Amino acid sequence: RRRRGPGPDRMGRMVRLDWFLQTWKAIRADAAQAVEDMPGNELDFRPRPDLMSFREIAEHILQVGRGLTGMLLDGETDLSRPDFRQKLARYAVQLGPDSGAAALASELRRAVEEDCRRLAEQPPAFFSEIITKFDGARLTRLEMLEFIKEHELAHRAQLFLYLRLQGVVPPTTRRKLALKG
Image: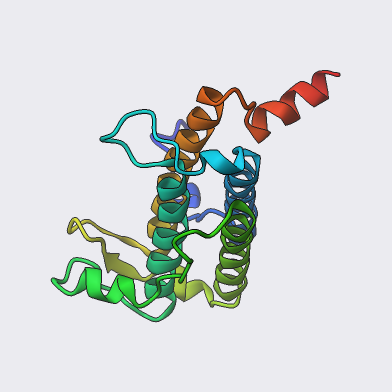
């Protein structure tokens, strides 16, 4: 008998939480390493005046990851409400305007470790609850967390591009080159 599609035994499976958290921490670690690798006087580098600076991108990763995850952990189920930005601001990490690379990288690592620890403590039902994203889409909390991680990956790629523009090889490429020997 031939099956059509993935079948019910596969449809209900979720991504393993421990794998999700491990990969998110690895992605964040690479972003933090990129911050440490950018020459200190170039944290405010931007390739064009209309683009975010390297520092702004790194801080955006930190603030959005912390804010959205905090809202989910605190039980928010509707991110499309008019007070979304106000609620998000409650989770803002306070960094000095001239905070250096070491402080920013440290906070990037600390925040994801704390968020992942809190997420690991949640029961399975937490991750399967349906919420409303800011664009009105309905998805599970785990799917929203995956969106947050994908958002972070996109911005990590920007950090890596900015490193390349400064003549610095990104951490993921250095690891691949080291494996080749």
